[in-house]
Amino acid sequence: MTTGSLSTPARKRTSQVAVGVAVGIGVVLLVAGLGGGYFLGSYLAKTTTPTVDITETGSTLLEPMMAIWGPAYTNTVNSHVVVSVTGGGSGQGQSESEAGSIDIGASDAYTTTTVGVVDVPVAISSQLVVYNLGTTLNKDHLNLNGTMVAEIFEGNLCGATPGAAIDWNCGLIQAANPSVTLPATAITPVVRSDSSGDTDLISTYCDMSYKGWTYGNSTKAFINTVPPNAKTGDGNAGILSQLVNITGGVGYVGISYLSQIEKDGLGWANLGDNYANSYLGGDVAVNASATANYIAWSIKDVSEDANLSLSRLNYAADGLALNMVLGGSPAGATTWSVGGGGTNPTATDPTPYPDANLEYSLIKTSPSDPAHQAYVVAFEEWVISYGNAHSYVSQVNFVALTPQLQGLDLEALSEVHIAN
Image (cartoon, rainbow, N blue to C red):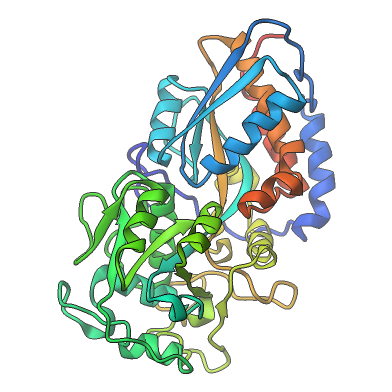
C-alpha cells in the first residue's frame, strides 16, 4: 500500500506472533495498559465550566456510532461537554486531525504517515458488498468472492474487455450461485468519490484476493481512475442513493448503514473467504483439500475474523496497525489463492467474515491547548470502556473492542499531552 501521503494511509500487514488466544490474554493486557501510566476515568467529569465543544470529523462509517456516543457521554458523564460530529470521509479525518483543525479525526484505516497523531481503535466494524437486482434477488444474498468483486471493478469479469457490458448471469457468478437464476442485467459498479476508508477496505479485499488488481489499496483507490462503467457517490449515503436508482448496481457500504440498506430494499452478498478466492470464482478450489466458503455477515463471524486478526498482532513492531481483512494475514501467506489471500478458517473460528476492520480515532499528541485536550482524552477513555457496551455498539452493528485492544488503547492514549 502507498505510504507517501495522508490520503493513502498504509495498513500494515503484520506477521504472526505467538500471543495466544486474543480474548484469553485480554485481561492481562488491559491491566498492563492501565498500569503503564494511564488510569481509566482519571479526567472524567471534572469540569463545571461553560460548554466544552469537542469536534469530530471523518469516516462516514464511524459517523453513526459517534452520533450515538456523543450525546450519551453528555447525558451520562459530563453535561458540560458536547461532541459535534460530522462526516466527510476518512481522508478528511486524517488531514484535519494532523492540521489540528478538529479534536478527533475518524478513520477506517490506520495512518502510519501522520506525524504527531496517535491512532486509537474505538470499535470493530465491517463492510457489506451491496447490490440492487430487484426485490426477490435482493433477499437471496448472492455469493461473491474477492476475485469476482475485483474483476467487477476492473471491468474484466468473465473475460470481458474493460468497458464492455458485463451481465449478472456471467458464468463465474452463476457458478457460485447454482440455485439462483441470475438476470441478463448489466453490472454497474458504484464507488466512492471522496477519500474513503471504505474504499481502503474494499480495495484491500480485492488486492489480497486477485493478482490482477491494478487499483492498489488506499482511501483514494478509485478517485483518479474510476472503474469502467462505474458511477460515483459521496460518502456511504451517496453510494446508497445511487444503488437505489440503478438496477444491476453493486457497491460497498459500511455496516453502520445496515438499517438503511434494509429500508431501501437492497441486497448484500455473502463474501468468499480465502478458500473461495480461486480464479474460477470459488466453484472449484485450486487446492484440492479446500472448499469454497461464502460467509454470511453476522456479529459472530465478524468476531471470528477479529480473533484471527488479533492472533497476528505484533504490537511491539507495528503498534495498532491491525489489518482485519481476510483474518489479517499478509498477502502471499498461502500458495493457492490467486492474489495471496488471507487467513484460512480454523476449528476455533470456522466462518470468519472476510471484510472486517477497526475504526480509529486520530488525536493530536502535542495539542496547542493541552487543557482542552484533557476533555478529548476523557471522552476517548469513556468510548474505549463504557462506550463499547453492547447497548451502544449493537445499534450500528459494531463489535466491541476486546480487553486486549482496550488495554493497548490506554497505552496509546498515554502519549497525548494533557493538563493535570
